[in-house]
Image 1: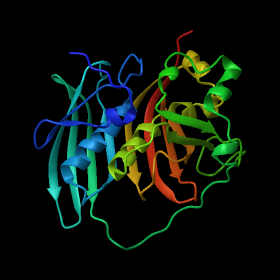
Image 2 (image 1 turned 135 degrees about the vertical axis):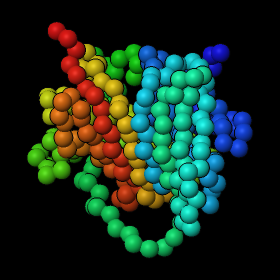
Image 3 (image 1 turned 60 degrees about the vertical axis):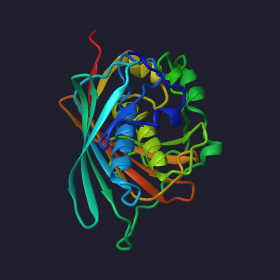
Length: 288
């Protein structure tokens, strides 16, 4: 059975099959395998719908196990591991037939008043003064065939130069403005899932910036490196609209044995920190 979907809203509209099982459709991105951000985003939806709106998703930790087949639906099975006074913890498995593609531990928490702080937002030129990723990519022949399919998210590369040798990154941090191209419904869970979908787009590019790569030169990235995501974690701090501009501040603090750690912190237009994410990826140069 093949099944493709046109828009991000449709992609995140999972069909409930039982109290704990959801069926997700496949993105139109023509990759050799399902885009990891799609699986994380749909896992956020499955967990959030299972836990209920009184306990919003506040974190997800996903381990990628197998490559998914594009064009085929994915079944998400959400098991509640524990429900406490404030937090519900779920296990979400993403399946295609008998193949487990990824497994996520998702935490959902009731909203309470309490401790709050954040790091300052980084310097930025603002989204409107930042060039589109497609324009930046023209320096190396454009984004390439795969990238042309990522139409759901608009991306702009912030031109403000950061500290060249910050204590928390092996290369200069890079700011990427992102937002959904289509208006999203007033459902906070959909906006969190959209942030999860977008969060995976620029991590590989950031991972190889200490090795001479320029963010936005995605065609040269694909020509020189082969990469696969190993795991992906997101912590959601505040509500934010993902169809408004969000600044993702990307860093890479370490890599060893071809495993790179990449992090990003997202801020809304007013400078409020809305989420933080981390991913480990296996990245190796192409032979020859």
